[in-house]
Length: 556
Image (tube, rainbow, N blue to C red; front, side):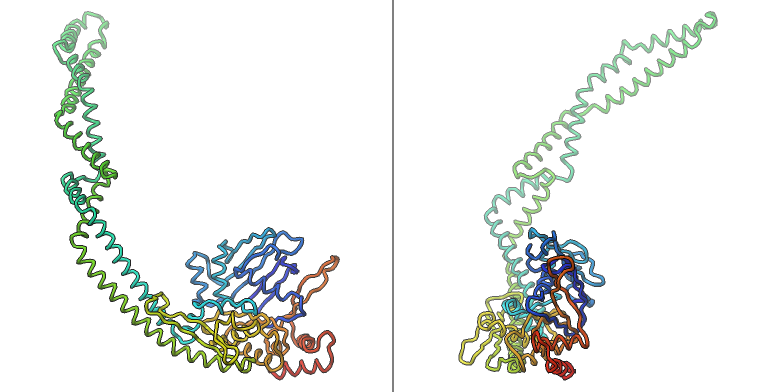
């Protein structure tokens, strides 16, 4: 239910906060007091069309915040969860309207698109007026209302699931047909390519390994000459090692005679000999390791170039050659065994279609039976609403070849306002006042099934009075036993039925040459006085007060 509405700088409203309660709440006031401003503000918060003209003169922007107390499991919470928006506690919708026409939307203080705000708002509130009853236009809404009235939602869900299963099966058939057609047109090419790639047998990571091996062998070839020359210098016939060893021994024998002159010299020569011998060993090992069969380099290059050539030919990376071969094998398999699999998929799709058709036909039959019951329920409400000569017709057009996730039916709510006339869509046939009363009759017949938790009726009592207004009030009160109902009304008979009464009025702003719209909750004497004003006009008489008292307490 709508728990609170906060409005700031919208048209004639400076700052306004309204708390709402369950049951029936009426909003009354003189013409031009600002009742429509409240509804425009609520509509803005629910994702309705923005307009820079809504911003109060002198302000840069306006803002409307609507707070909803929503039970767990309500579709609005699921919608928020699906969009990763916190949905614990109250649901708070906020819309900021700037003077240049731009708007910003928020749900629970998180920025959202206006489309999401509109979807959430539509699940929480329905606004019905003489000139704005979109619910009366959309056949999809008519179908959902009929299903809700008849308790057909489980059957409708089963039909939707069967439809998705059938469409999925059809998609598989179409995809396999495309693969078979493609494989047929390229059969020879595929077979030759599979044979080629199978012989080539590319392996994951092979290109990188081959390129590294080739690089290593080519570098080894370049340094082999220098390694051999260095080894020959150290270990060949010109090696300094024998001469250094001979000199070291001679100097060793003369050390005692040199008087310390040779201290450390022999050791240094021995260290040099050791270093040269170590270098000889390392050079010999490097030479052995750098030796390779030139044919190995040739084989490596041939393999690498073959892989890269195949990749260029098939316009893929070398790493993807194996995957390409697997795909081609699968395409050939689809060509070779595709007809058998296609037949199996087609049979599955036909079975899914038959299942959908059976469920849709059963649902269609149930809808027709429920339609008669709904027509009878609505017909019971029409006479008291001054629609005694009118008729409500649930039109169901069935086309078994036009399959949708909702079944095979197009549901329309038609009306006939006078005997002998052709039934037609409510928006085309009924007048403004008749539209709203038809809607009220439908809502009462539906009870709370298929409705948002808050219903708003804008002046549905226009053009009627007396017993008809009394009947409207009674039905609004009955409806309010199951959902929250807000009604903008000029009818005292409707106002007297309310559990809560808000008066809308314009008053001058202190110290400024302008007026502002305000809202006052009424109770007791104030409520009686307001209903008396609605009865008598600007001059309230004792008789009007007595009549107001009778209306209020006669409804108790």
